[in-house]
Each structure stands twice: as C-alpha cells, then as structure tokens.
Image 1 (spheres, rainbow, N blue to C red):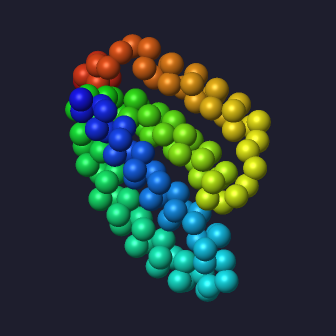
Image 2 (cartoon, rainbow, N blue to C red; image 1 turned 180 degrees about the horizontal axis):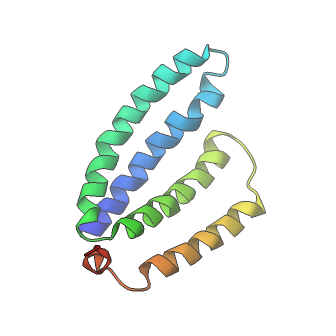
Length: 122
C-alpha cells in the first residue's frame, strides 16, 4: 500500500511542479521574470509539501534508484497530457520513443525486485 501512496503523491506533486516549471510560459509571459519566479516558488512550495512525504513513504519500500526512475516515469506520464491539454501543443512521436526508453529503464531498475537492502553499500 505504501508504494500506491508514493505513486499517487508523486503524481500530484508532478502536476504542481510542471505548473511551477512551465505554467509561467503560458500564463505569465507578459509579466517580468521575477514575478514568474515568485509565483513558481509559491507553487513549488506546495509541490515539496507533497513530494517529500511521497519519497519518505516510498524509500522504505523502494531503493533510491527505483524511486528515481519511478519519479521520471511519472513525470513523463504527467508531462504529455500537460503539454497537450494545458499548453495546447501537439504531441510528437518522440514522446512515445522517450516513453519506450523509460520502460527499458524501469525494467532494468526493477528486475531484481523490491529489495532496497541489497543495494545498501557495506
């Protein structure tokens, strides 16, 4: 159940982070850059309130490498709808190829199972 909570929280945190990183390109394009920075920091604060607990919950059940790859896959899964629905940009075949590469990364990081202890240095 901890992994499910980790995934759900990381999805929500990624929505906030994409808004912080890229939302200003659409919504604050006419404002000075420092306004965009302040707004982005405000959004990122809420992202961190969700992301830090997600990583703490997941770290006891996933290795650090698994947690990072999971984060990257979630980022890509949230990014594609964000680009299409929010930023109103077209989808590209390159997003599919990137997703396939991420599937390979997931395979290699998770193929040994969910045993974070085995990767702890001695």
